[in-house]
Image 1 (tube, chains in turn purple, blue):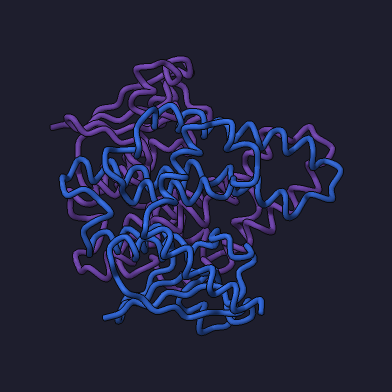
Image 2 (cartoon, chains in turn orange, red):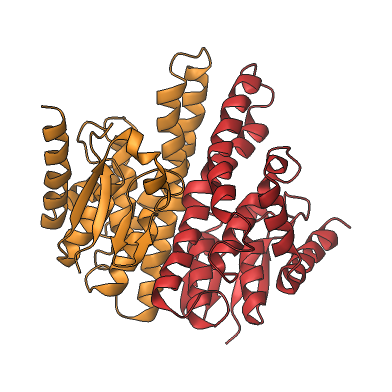
Length: 215
Length: 215
């Protein structure tokens, strides 16, 4: 059964692979699972048919027969549970890799997203500069310990896992800011992940959607 | 083997059960697992011994023999995997409950936490009022769809699950603000969860720590 995911018909990220379907595409490519994509306009995302799948009216969703999921973290955990390649088999190592999935989404992503949102919604406010300095420091409070934990290692826990996939996906949101460059271990970590064939295939697939939409 | 969690020696929440050890205590109580608690001062949380367990220097951590975890979501998922009572047995229902765990932590909690952080760090800034209105609307954009999805049901997916446990834990951060009261279905949902004997035991346990610390 071929799973179906949803993605933006015209991604607001300009095809940079920052929309959350990218994470799911990457996970599916890592395990070699073919998938279909249903593209949605912004209007369609707020229609009842999509809200029945995703109560918050966002992308991605994941449908596999009767099962429908809408959180990228849960979708990737589900894929990792059905296929080898994203999580270790050993129970303790597996729990540690899952720990990094949650760390990516609940500890590292929120301050990065808050900083990004501030750029979208507050750039014209007179408080923007003062807040940005605060937000930068909050991001550094996550990147510093993360770089320290990664150390000279290639991945967070031995082999590449879904924890790395999500952590890198979160860090990629900082590309183009100088913040990530303050941590060479992290820029190397992101580059290492982006060199994976599965990442490249997923990136090309979401990029092709954007290019078709912008013709 | 009795697991050991860490918690604040003197919780900054004044014993209101909002520190993240509460979620883990509650999960352990739901499954009937006895646990030990190691209390930490703020200084101890930044010492190498604790940073080895939790790279970001926070609480809770969870130790079970050689296994150490530090994200509350991952800890609760691990507990749910070892004991009955927090996740359905059926694979699809289980995936949907896990989906709500991620929704609580990655979709609903971030705007709530951002609003709370703003109260701590920006209350004295002249932009505070203007930002609060924005932040309130961002929280409403999560609470409205959540209330709609919950509808007249007791829990998010049939029986109580770890998804409800985390979602209620996140919503509790809004108690004392008028925001939650705008959604009677959600205040009832939180009250329903707080009436569970396991919640009450966990709440009393963290409260006792705070009361000892404030003597």
